[in-house]
Length: 299
Image (cartoon, rainbow, N blue to C red; front, side):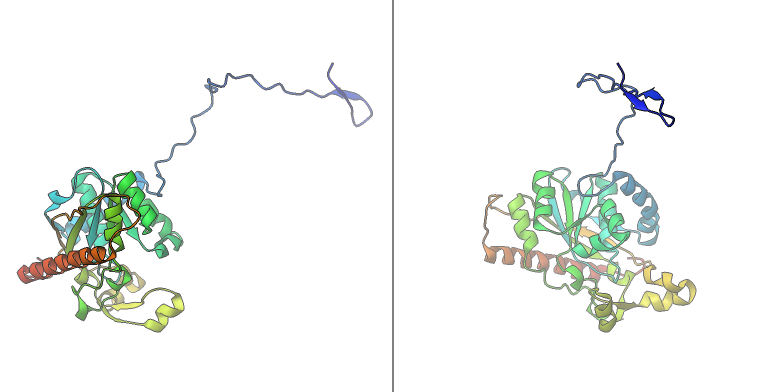
């Protein structure tokens, strides 16, 4: 018997209790739509967003910067590898150029390791993650390189690289404490050095305003030649307008480490020696490339 309940005038009405349909646990209802499937991976990278960004960025890459590679075949076709490059430009143009070129030519995704600051920026942080940006933490790098056998790109100069003024161009800063070498050792992957020419001139810094940077809580606040050249025409957009410097990227020989991966500790002196040797290799390659460069704009 259905239960009875009093109606507004004291009449009774039946409380109809719906009976759920019985569905075998191994046979989901066929009429329900499939759950939404996203292409965003555990790092936040979206291949859909990468494809869109590649399409939008390619004219800048191929027509504006006219990027030219030397030694691209030295980057492994499979397996993990940690690429290490010099870093420059008030808003660095070398990271997207390097990532785009490798993905375009080798058809392999590239994850860019960068400071936590990018992750915290509204909107920019999300776009950065969708484009393949990952916080530069040793655990993240290990998982990418050792467990997932991916390509990762890191700039050991950190913010010291892009904050250089124009008179300091192509003078590499210290490569931190060599943490990238230790990660490569622990992950059992090679370090592939990249020497990039052109980024320094794409957005050169004339001088910096430390007081403004401190007030805004950012590493540096630059006044660039681009602001002065494009400011009268583009206004605020001049802060993100690059000069059409010719880019050349040289891939140096991969550096392999004759050590067992997954060791709890590695020689600190060996790490620092290897890091300095890699920094010196990139520095010498930059000087060689600059000696043979005929023009900033035409290479």
